[in-house]
Image (cartoon, rainbow, N blue to C red; front, side, top):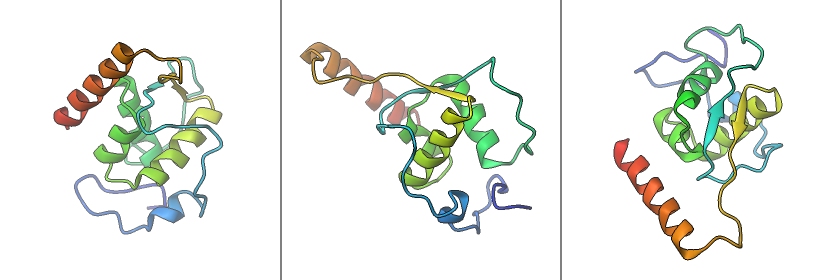
Length: 122
């Protein structure tokens, strides 16, 4: 088993920083609430099914946020951001825009509502 693999349901004995090769910053701006989506037309990865990258791509089919992926995979948020950023730059995932400074109060309330529903679903 290499550093990217982990057994589902068992604690991952690999320290999180080894998954990111010690990197703590993503090359892509990834707010914790940003929804991501696996791209159907991306290159086919050849990773084992228990590889954390493959698990992120599987979760990305449902459009979860960066924070949801971190929670579902029991990864620190910073590690999830780096791994998701790598998958974005490699063409496997797309990050959908979140609210900007010009967002209305209604748009912000809707985002908070969606975030709370997603967290409750976990």
